[in-house]
Length: 359
Image 1: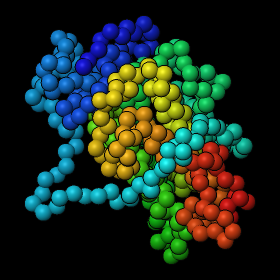
Image 2: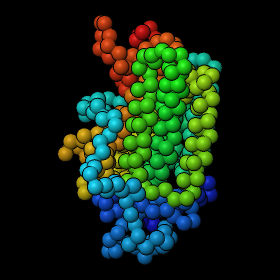
Image 3: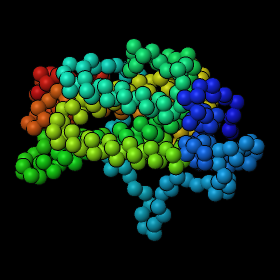
């Protein structure tokens, strides 16, 4: 189940050369992902000897018999199962199909700074995952264009998913924590912001755990994630204390990138560029089926990405909206009951709601 027919021509993509050669397969718990000794990225192998090629040693020195579930459930004498703390509310197929990539143009200096930081981070992410020029979309429309001269591989997609979700789960936790402490100090209600921010962080972590069932990072990627999280957490912490609006706008732009990323992945699956993920026998992790309550006939890799993209679209609309509100007094419109209208649907409002529309 390992293909090594891909050639890497661009010198800039050498760090991911071995990564680009691996076709990621998650057919069941029989398929595991193990670290590549030379690069620390992810590669795929199978516990079935008949599916291994002679070049397995290029990807790992771990014996097949030692492959394991990356985070197996704890077996205790009394507890049978632990359910999700925040059960997912679910989507219809029409709601997921209605999500589209979009961009909110910066309107203030803070918006512009947040947008440029996201673009800077995107540049380094492209470089780290070995994306060459032919794999990049139109630079004039970086958050809406999905066609590229050359598609990414399943391995490259998984690396992007894992790294993106490991970062995206930070801001909600920081914002929720700071607002919780602020509520305790001021002895006032927070009007629903804390729960939404913590649930957002939890949801992003569930995305990560789902992909971790497909990809166990190597030492290099773990170091990248540790370093990025350390810088990111402290930066978000400081900025949220000073200008929380900028953080929400930053997260809105970050989620724009996430929606674009997943939309392009869906497009490449539909175009047949990712044959492993298009295989009818491909099975997504059970953790995803349980969390999103996925119907029996909608459990393909494309369906999984549709669910995740819809989540990201919701975070995009929520944070762009929160960035438009009075940070200390306005209630959270997404958990409020309105006098004359239904609760706003953030996934269908890419640029977020203006304050006058919801307060």
